[in-house]
Image (tube, rainbow, N blue to C red; front, side):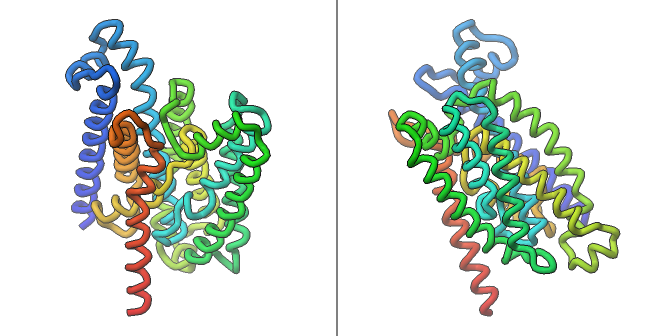
Length: 333
């Protein structure tokens, strides 16, 4: 059975990566100056004319790379939080982490100006504080998954009120830039955003994979996990820190892109099987979802560009409703 699950997971990972690369090539070729996929590949491999290299390498490639990296980071963060909370509803969106990161970033943008340095650190600090608040408020001789979700929803609303307050007191220019950022978009992503995002993911993804044994143990009852030698509170804290860091880094680069961290791990779980969301498959499918959503955001309305967060919310909201209805029927059966 383990070999079958491993084969399914590997197949999903490879298929997700292949689809993400195909979407990336298609997205790079779309624009006011259309470039055929073959030419896109040729330019990426070092060929093409100087004009084509300028358009692809300097203007379009950073955007699609940001979409891929943000999607992977959010999906892995969701896989971690859903596993540690033992609840499919738990994600950085629902637990208030995304709102906390948004508050930190918006506060810095409003107080120091949209060109201020340190927005990623402000988002990371906001996400960590929100996660700490949710964890402490949900603690009752342990952390229950559903209590964690309810507390996270409440904290998220409170933090979102703080975001609204900063927007109200900001001048019109700062408020406009902060509002654009809050909608979630990779439209303005350049190499300055891609570099730190890639470095963070290169550090945090191995850290997430290193928690595999801990995550397997945390699926069981607390007493069983302790019998396996797991220090529960330290283990949960380590997993939450990695998840929060992944979500905060993604939010700082592209704003709060909704539902990716919530939906993708559950889709990966159903495709791969097993008892917990697989991280590598989640990363591949998350990258695919955000890249595809960004492509749709640029092409669904001719002459207009939608925020990518709006597209992912439209795709994810029906899934949330279905999951709530399914769980309600299961609990009343």
